[in-house]
Length: 83
Image (tube, rainbow, N blue to C red):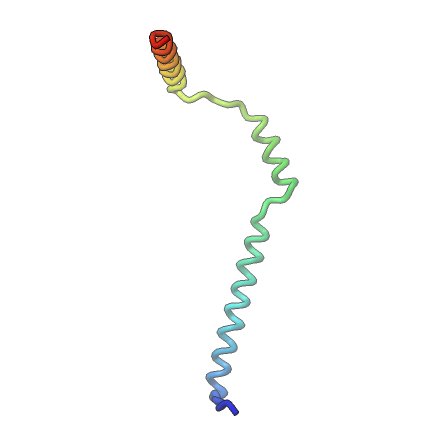
């Protein structure tokens, strides 16, 4: 027969209370996360709000477009030369 270890009642009480406290804290955190989740209606509302907003081009978008066009033309001319 395996030897049994008897815990003093005070140690067992401390261990059980710490376990219960951890469980309660874990459940509280799970409930907060569940409250923070967005519902379908929240996503629908966000979508309609974002669709109403007009997109504002960044200040340097013209420079970027010009750079892309320049690179594109250089690539086309390079490919034409290789043919």
